[in-house]
Amino acid sequence: MKIGMLGTGPVGINIATKLVKQGHQVRMGSRDPENPEAAKWARRNGKRASHGTFSEAAKFGDIIFNCTNGAHSIEALRKAGERNLRGKVLIDLANPLKFSKKGEMTLFIGNTDSLGEKIQRTFPSAKVVKTLNTVNMRLHTNPSLLPGEHSIFMSGNDKQAKAKVARILKGFGWKSIIDLGGIKSARGQEALLLFWWHLNKRFPNEPFNYRIVRRRG
Image (cartoon, rainbow, N blue to C red; front, side):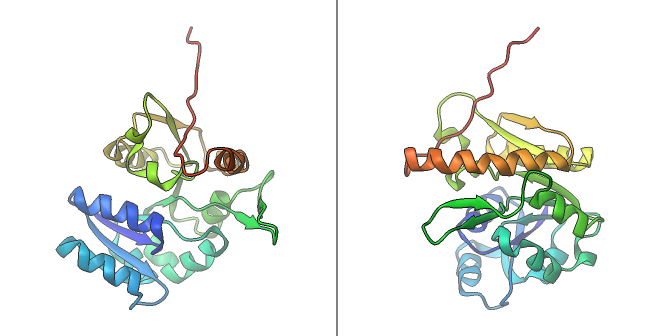
């Protein structure tokens, strides 16, 4: 599969590396076609790894990952080009995080909207699926770091797109994948980051996640 990776930070590099190791072709995109982090990543990962602009990565990929900073995601996706996103699955990991001068975290969008919804509205021809935004990047491609069953969530309007994303998540090792429904449910996923922030301060440098306990029947 050909995959376009938008974002050259640790999250994008971690996922892109895993995908290449699984046999996929990955093109990492950034604003600068000569981005040193992207170039270094491509050299390390062999012939299935390449890099270029946001537009080149989006055009290359059959599936696109948005691993950009949430505050700049819309701008980055505009640079990727609506035509290059048309009809494609867009896996959105970004969060609408805002930090005060004192280091406290809030969301710059929420309650009645979400970043996932805004991306879907801005790029209506893309098939946006929100996922992997509620856990530390160490768990993205290696959920077995934690013992037992724990869950990852998905939000999106297109059932076929979510089925494709579920296959990717299963390939990363996720066993409990909870479909929350349409992209509107991304509000809940993004809001969970407020809780995650306080847990992260309580358990610094420790990966953690949520287990949904249900009584069946």
